[in-house]
Amino acid sequence: MKTLFFTLAILFANVAISQTHQITKHNGEEVDVNFIKIENDLVYYSFNGSAEEHKISKYAVAKITNKQSNQTQKVSDKVIVDSKSDYKFVTILSQDKTIGLKQVANFSGVSTKTKGEPPIANKNQTAMRIKTQSASSGYPFVSIVEKADGKYEAVAYVY
Image: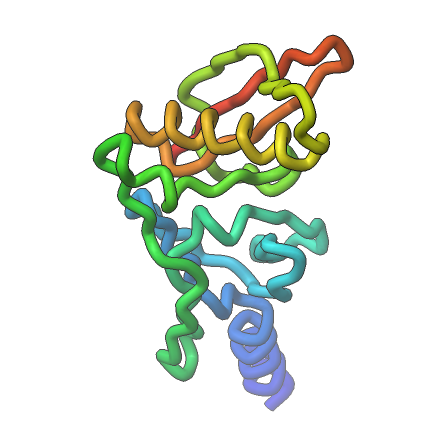
C-alpha cells in the first residue's frame, strides 16, 4: 500500500512541475516553458525544474499555448518589411527589449540638425531616416544609440 501511495505521489508531483505552456516564436521555434507573465513588452518564463526567471521580447513571440487547456494567447503579429515604403512598420526598440531577436546589421550616421527646429523635431527626423534605411534592407526592428557628439549608431534586428 505504501508503494502505491509513493508511486501516485511521484506521478502527480511530476505532472504538477512539468512545463505547462508552449511559446511559439515568429521564427518557427517552439519552446516548452512555465509561463509567468507579460510585462513591459517582455515575456517572462522559467524552464522545468528551475526557479530562474528568463525573458524574451514580446516581438519575438507569436503565441503562448496552455498545454493543459489548449488555449492560445496571441502575443504579437509578425511584421514583414519588404521595401522602403514599409518604413511605417519598422519598430524602434530600446536595447533591453531586443532579447530573442537576432542582430543582423549596424549602421551609423549624424543626427539631423535643422536650424530653427526644436530638438524633438530633429530627433524625429533622424528616427524617420533610420526607419527608412532599415525598411529598405528588410529589417523590422531597430535600436538607436545616440552619442554625445551628434552621431548615432543603429542596430537592426530580425526574428
